[in-house]
Image 1 (cartoon, protein in one colour):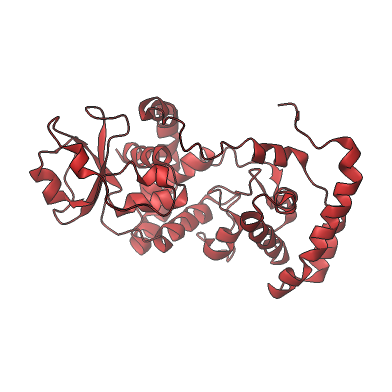
Image 2: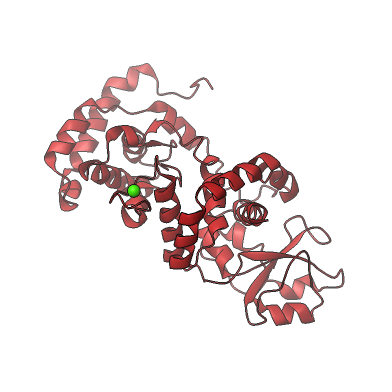
Length: 331
Ligand SMILES: [Ca+2]
């Protein structure tokens, strides 16, 4: 795409001065995190704003509170397709021993780790090539979402200071990096060594990426032995209105508002729901109902583990297709 909304040339010199002044203002915060002056002195002088990143940020759909939600089925067909399933099986087989060990340690199913890897970067085949420090410095300086991006810029500088090579510090325009597309602050908190060399290399080591994904899921409260969800068929007679959630979600309301209230599996079974293609979880497991394309289409009962996938990326389409890809990879 041509950078139609790029910063006009006349303002460049002024912007560059403001940009450098902004970077200088970060020094006390960086020092408080133990980032050395030498690292900052190496990076800051050569840094310039990236107008392309500002443009991408401004082109983001603005929450779209009233835009209609499309059907899930076309998305599922595109994202849980035979190519992604077969590549998932290859990644699964290639890492079996390691995945089994991580699952034993963490309770996070092997196929869930593989499905996240598959969804985030198509099993490592595209991880983004934006320079993270330049992108995050631009977004922090520009200021619209500074509270989000400035801590990520500082975290990236911390990674560099810790010895992660600058060449590794690339990713999406908004700062997600490596096979699991972690934000830098997430990497610092949860990046994990999976192959025993003492480094959490989420850019070239599948073992480290998978161990880091599992670590994220553990920290977000994944419950061992429970599925993410199950597919069900719902009797046409079910009174959906009485199933509506009674609480107002505090985050991503458009995602959580689509879920019913919580009932136990035993209660859902009493209401006449039928499990399609598998076993029921234990009667005491709590689940919400989601019918992504409306009544009489596909329907899913979702456990608290589904919320962990939403914690990774707050989108029902994302979380459903991770769950369904995981199920397909394991078959
Ligand atoms: Ca490692």
